[in-house]
Length: 359
Image (tube, rainbow, N blue to C red; front, side):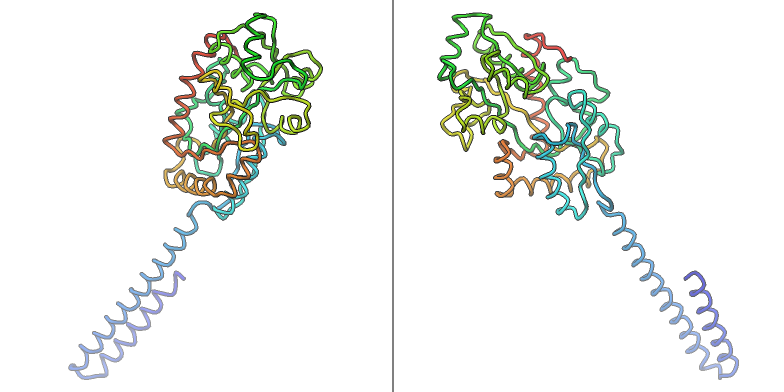
């Protein structure tokens, strides 16, 4: 294309000179005008072509132009992974690009979160953020190489996962008040299990302990599975376990749910009260959201935020999330940022009073 313009202009100019030599003076101005018109026409064509090229380049740099990596800081197969895969599929359709789930579990979800914090802030790495990595973990002294509030922009809060306070089916406590009465009659004798120090179950148990002013013993396990087995075996009295995981056992009559830990009763287990109905303020849920590195371009942030907000607002999606045990919230920034600040204010004193330390 570089040789086309000069050659064409040369030919036109030589032709015009020849014509000017062989025609009367009167005609020279007309020919000269024709040459100028030809030059203008060529210039206009070149400008139009350049504009087309410019538009093409702009289209090529529009976001996104390649697959997006969705960092899930947990092992595959859990509730976090299930939610991420459901939402990543819909987000990929909205963006017109693949959104690939990348499981990077370890160190209480800090490992994957740290990876996302250090990724290029170009919109091609997004994070499934959660409380353990962003709020409660750092509050307990978890060592991180990132700053949860300043190293990320928190775009969408998907929702919260409700836990259930469960006991064996043959346990004498029929409701939360019965359980509290038993604990008060035997201070320091009743114990409860959780998936580990700093887990949602442990934090909710510590919150209940402080609000209800009771003395009970926490037994940490390496995961909720071993804790559940000991609950059924009678080694522990109760536990806080994900409602979605407890549901089959509740329905099967193996365990009894005395309460759920969310702000509202569950849509399926409407007969089970919230813990806060007996002990005001006793709300303790896990949560998941969408976050990106802090220096991600504003227009890319907005594209991701807006598309995810539309996905979370779909009735079908809200139903599917509810089936997974999540109470959909769909909060955008700055509501998400405010939520994080409130979580820090809420759990900071609980962790300090309980002397909870990351392990």
